[in-house]
Image 1 (tube, one colour):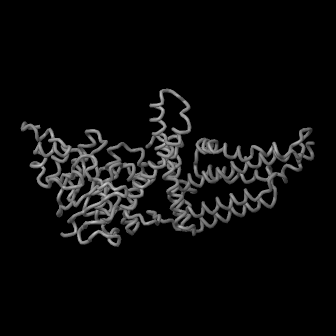
Image 2 (cartoon, chains in turn cyan, brown):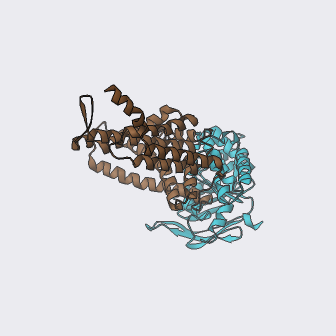
Image 3 (cartoon, rainbow over the protein chains, first blue to last red):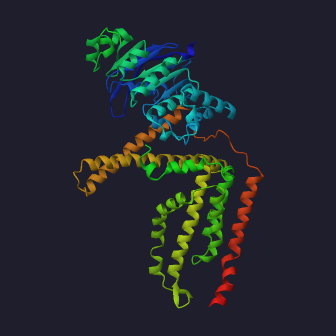
Length: 247
Length: 270
């Protein structure tokens, strides 16, 4: 199943003002993995994520998603297989109703009306938001917005899910629901986040970025448990790994 | 976002109205757009002193509002919000044009006042027709309809984004205004320099946000074409709607119904 593989090789990127956001990032994520990308603010997480669905094109280095090496020509195909959930759900939801928003992707990918409707409804059911189908997105709560934003992406049937801070701005219950939802997915998942407790719960693997470079890549327990490493890169050992009592 | 400019202008209300179900809502957006265009053209074609002859045209917005179950209050409120523009356009007419064109009893009416009244009536007619059009189609269906009518795609997409980003910019502006107020220690006037900077900053922030929304659209395969879940298939109902109203507008334009009715009454009354 090579089409679920995400491979980044020596990816470097500098913004027009000269800021070097990525300085030679490499990793390989295989089918079905759930990987957290962590790092302080300005570590390069967002820039990396923008390369994964072809919003930014690799100028230096390569990004491979499944069978495609990301270029301008393959960008459309890559976008179809990489579903991107944005940090701010308000940016992602722009249609008058929840249903139309979820149907937006399938429509653009040329499905028939019947298929679009079926896809959209099954994506909404998957995130438990089918009852909101006729509501305007801006009237939803933050948790509902996030779930709908995820549905908009699921409706395109992506192989890979890329999420930028999925648990931000959610109340504890909303966050819990999100974690349970993410746990049920079988997609390859790449999650950029500061929510290290969530990482402990759902991601077996962690990639740590700092200053545009991968400074650690390995098992979550080993990396997040390494207090010296975490502190050095502006992070913190999660509470749940600090004590060995059962929670 | 919900409490920002979108909340202030009740934009959600318009979108909600567009989701109502009525015989008018079920019409193809193209038929509604064409009829509205015909209506606006006819209203605009009247000579500048015409007021009474425009009256038969009021039937169109009133009939549509009734058939589409639109709440009159909401539309009137929107009309009132746009009214200052029309007032400014016509403001100087009474000052500049003193020629007496008609007298009612002993009161002489100047061309300026008459053309001012005419501007207001035309404004009310055309803007309410436009509001009804949006309330019965929704901006998305309307833009898709206009595109299929032959409007260049780039304009249809522009219109869609204009609608979408207007509220985005407005919301950013409200947030910035709030933060300026919080830190301005109660002073009302902050000087041009501050506002200049705030507006410049607003532009940059809105561009960033617009960029993010566009990214979200591209990420889901947006390529410039507006697609609908159920593209409407125009039928005889649509043809009848467009033809019926157009004939009515033209008839109203050619024969002054109000004058025909009124002449007799005025002559015998005075």
